[in-house]
Length: 436
Image 1: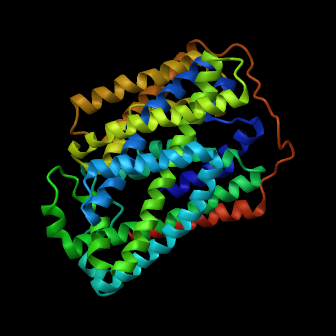
Image 2: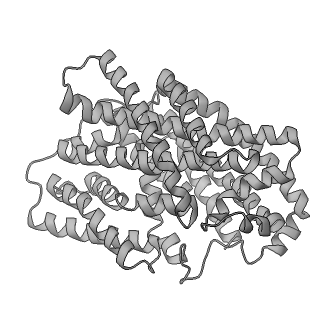
Image 3: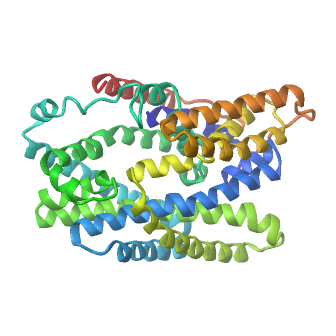
């Protein structure tokens, strides 16, 4: 499903970002609304990056080291955090881009290796499908506690997808550095193409892990996070020593790649959206660079201190990330989409909509925990949309908002981008139909 959101990002959202010439996503909100909306999103992003995204990446990496090498999870958290912080501190975005390239290739090779060996171990594709006929479905029952089909295809699942792939500095920062719109679009579509492969290099091996070592996986956990250790255990039990090193390098590279990207994007947001506007308006480029580097140190320390808390969370990393990002995603998605497609939206409507996200979603999570979190996100999103719409009809934006158009005025959608995007959507649809 994420591939669809990435195609929308490449074709409809990225051209707008690059034409304006923004460096951060909150910067777009200032151009469209005002600095207050920009600042609120910046604060949101910094808090959630440190306490949710970075912490979960540290926890996942440390859990892998603990599962394979029996390294205590606390040592793993601090070790990974120090390494990632070090080369982000000294490398910046260039280190992020090149590390992503090198580690991404390694991850793909390692992922396909584990897929082939795991499939061979379980007896081939036909035996795997026969044994897991009740698991290989993306269309889950309507009363499924986490991923009901209504939420996945027509509801709350689209909110984190659009937020993550279209409005998150962590993801979009690479595209904002593209030399032109088409180059950025091709990069996003390449990512969407690789996203389709996740089914075969991550999901299917994870299912096979439960086929082969299900009892051991369940016996090794006491917090309900059994699924988090499935993939590392598959590597440990299935691969020869040499292959374990290759796969560990791939997983460790992906973890570091994600962490350094998060650190760089958070440092960029802090420096450009908070430090320069409010703390030191006349800061030189060198001073801003030093502040950005210092912020990476502070952020990684916060994440390392908070990451152990995840060990006590029931539901695993995936649920933890999506459930807690829900406290701000709906309001941000509404502010961006309305800001792009409805000129009458005022800054007050957008700001209040983003603020309302927290109490509405918090009420549903705390007092109606039986509602799947994706339904809670959808209810929150629709409530915010209703509020913004009513507010705008009563108090519309009076002054005309003219967005800057600094670059790429002669842009036209290229045929290769168009047909590449269509191909991704068709292929994703075919996979959904096959695994329905």
